[in-house]
Length: 446
Image (cartoon, rainbow, N blue to C red; front, side, top):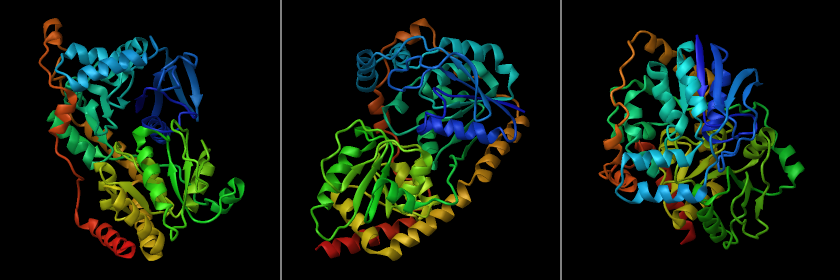
């Protein structure tokens, strides 16, 4: 069996989000099939500048074929087109212009897929919202499988993506919330799909003492791992944590790992260590009292899964349906909707070791049952076997013609997403520990 993994950027230095997800899947499927990665020469998601040479190289034993990006992203053009499609009535042509402005626009990559899709049994397209997935899935026709990595942001409300969700052979979802959202916006329930997510290369022998010694970290700490960015909820995290620091009873520090796009508050108990390699990252998570995930938009939090694999509880933003759903299904994390709940749940985890320990143990079991690599690999292989027995479905929505592209009859994407169902999927009874912990902490503060 031969599989193509198609993603917007790829490499060992690309260490987050859908791109890391794609690399993990490519490397693990390479144990069962012949895998080739098709991607661009870009390494920076902001500019999409051609920084890597075109052609083929090996990355961890997997061949990676790169194609040049036609133009870099112009932030002003992209912002203008985003305002147009997200906030105003507009046309399909406006949405296609937005897609081109978002980047990475690589006609050479699409041309290669058109000519060579038949060389593969299946083509896995990562991240629905980019040029390569929109045009590449059509070019691959009956061989296209989509890993959408969709978040609940305005992009999901654009009309151009609804046919994509209905036309691929199958979808590999990250979470039940992502599947429910895509079903609601596109009506694609008839397309085969499975919630699979992704595993991680979590070590069996993390060494938190080594991390503490190397980085001079003393005392208990909470950890944030990821890009320190407003879009990841870090402004709110700083606001809430500085409020926590005003209480002399609280002993936690906040350790931040990842590149920063924000100014870090000048407080001795808020430490930014910058980007760390995987060994340091896992040692840090293993040494933390808990992981904090303040993001409003996720399709799956890999770092939350990594924390659970290491037996650490998670405190998540309850306004993100996916994070809230993960906490409920795992019974391994608490969540907050505002500053008061942040303080209450953080103090509950700090002051009740039995609670933190129980959540951490639940998280480790949840990870083993759902995200160990044999589980992930089996779901992919099972889908490939299923599709072999089914005839390819025709593309149900052809690309619109000249006149249809120019009709100004599409609702603003923000309006579309506002009408979609909200809330976590799955069983609700597991929310009880969150309520009990928050109530207990609230009584202590009173």
